[in-house]
Length: 280
Image (spheres, rainbow, N blue to C red):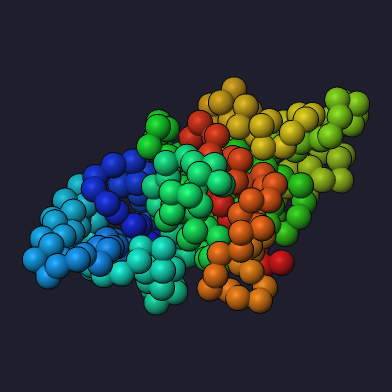
């Protein structure tokens, strides 16, 4: 259940639009929202003062645009490295969801450009909703879930159904990607498939209409293609806790560069992407 949302803002854009639409979801309506803007250190006190003033204006504009219940809003203007501050505030506020903008950079580009969203994703254990600058943001009634019966995928399914169960006309797209056309074609009746069956049963329990989709090929590519073909409003995929096991506060270059479905989808998906987390 989403009770505490953290949104990192840098000027009115897709993130604020996304949050506004998220707050229309019945189960999310009562959530408290922390609106955060981070000012990086400046070379002079005068520049710092100017940046803080500009940051205050950014926060004020966000509050005006979102029109949230004042009793449910917490405004934070912080100084420091945005990568560290976002994670720190998320822990302080015990956030159930972090919403951030994303430029859609690949892993190597993210490292070289010091991408805040990529590093936060690397270091946090909390669900993240990433909204690229070039995606169309719309009301959520159709969610695509990449499903393989793993713990992270089950977490995605559970959260997606909690969003959709009270939305009239909603639908969950349960997507399974197989390695070959032959294995994909073998799934004739999804209700009898050992992977699909638990997800279908859960959707039925929640009263959410479902559609099972099976593709063969590269998982990341096929999820993105299916999201476009079936006009998903939101893609949700599970991602294991990727923090380094030895030093939890330092980015793990090997993992950043390694193959990852979640990394591909967050960059290429035609709609916002919510990455659920599961330790392991």
